[in-house]
Amino acid sequence: MNNKVKAALAGAGALTAVNAVRAAMFVPEKKDWGTAEPEKIDVERAQEHISGAIQIKTVSYPDKSLVDFGEFEKFHKFLEESFPLIHKTMEKEIVHEASLMYRWKGTNPDLDPMAMLSHQDVVPIEEGTEDDWTHPAFSGYNDGEFIWGRGALDMKNHLICVMEAIENLIAEGFQPERDVYLCFGQDEEVVASGDSGAKAMMEVFKERGIHLDSLVDEGGAVLDLNIPGVIKNKKLIGVGIAEKGYTDIKISVHSDGGHSSQPPKHSAIGEIADVVKDLENHQFKSSLMPFVSELFSGIGRNCTYPARLVTCNIPFMKPLIKEVMKQIPPAACLVRTTTAVTMTEGSPAANVLAQNASITVNFRQMPGTTVEDVVKHIRKVCRNKDINIEILKQKEASKFSPTDSVPFKILEKICKQQNPDSFVAPYLVMGGTDACYYEPVCENILRYSPFNVTVEELRCTHNTNERLPLKTIEEAITFFMRWVRRASSENGLEE
Image 1 (cartoon, rainbow, N blue to C red):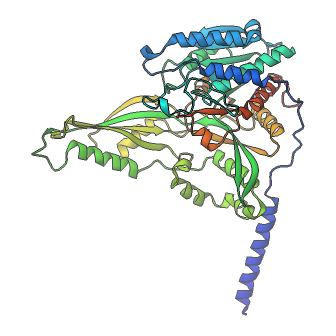
Image 2 (image 1 turned 120 degrees about the vertical axis):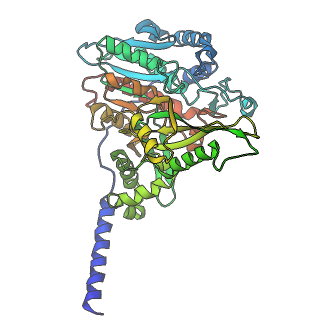
Image 3 (image 1 turned 30 degrees about the horizontal axis):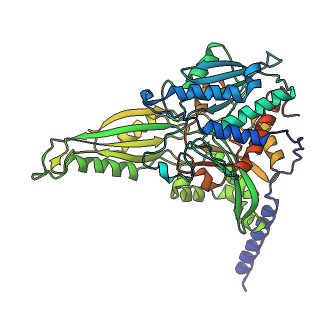
């Protein structure tokens, strides 16, 4: 064996040894998160309240003439009867038709208040699917394992558990240092509506000169991670620190039209088809934002030792990771603004050439990409410069909330105490929440719903057989009680 081969083998051996050491050290931070006393929770009462809330059909529609505001009044009455201590102790306002704002006055007026968000409304049941449900969609049926119905996961479960937590704290005699606000919008499901209840409540804060210390809304969850040989019995706690924007754009082309027996070389449909191809073949540039690296690092550190021989090298594999993610739709949406052609219109009859053909495209912008950037992108990548662009609906992407803030650290501590085998990872929310409207009055916006559900159960959100596992309720109320105790205190991280 010559000296060069020996040197190469020695180098390879050294690299292998270094990698083995790196993998051995690539583990979660060892930290004593402490313990917390068990909370006194009436789980059966909470189940009854969630079931009762689901039975009230607070359905929202883009067309407000279709909304039955009588159902929202019924829901408000239900909350009054179910949570008497809250309605005796806290100030309540009805904002913007049916949105609810509660204020629990704190002992220290010098501290910025905190807010907890939820929404009262649910999406409609798709016509023709009513009989596909195992239990009727608005029954709130409790079979001993799940509570079934629209809103069971999005998000009457969250709203009721927040109310249960506050009711319990009041009953215990707890008094917050900072003001605690509960803000329950009535039209969150009607995404990007310009006059939303959440926006109206934010304006109330703004007009009163109120700046929020922290805000918690939906957007994250607790997921079990079990991959044989890779990761075992770990819980991923996703906390949304930002959310994508939402833009619907209609793109149209015009043609002379006429009879289908005398077609031109390219019809309006053909021209709009070229627009579709141009958009799909020229996707937005991708990038690995810091939250993606934190997510992969958190997962990687919690893997078994053999798997960590690979995951410890994630910092050096970013270009490869990005290319792989771009090929997988559920992952690609984490690294770039997405383009989805969802609707098309053309001729009204099979023997008529369309005079106007159009497509509707849904874009979900990454933070840092504006609606104006989307329009510029369309103009740039489409060869046809005579297209007409009409913005139908728009909402800008949110800013990123810091992960080194006291509120984020409090949330992480509570989660680690509840689930020692968990890791908290920031991520980007794909859908829209009411939280984004509060950016003018709050920097620490955390999107987290503390319900341990499976991926299969999550897929039932906005779908047939939406249901909530009963086993998740106590842990969720426990989280909210501890969150209020600590986040409402000036020194909540030290408690």
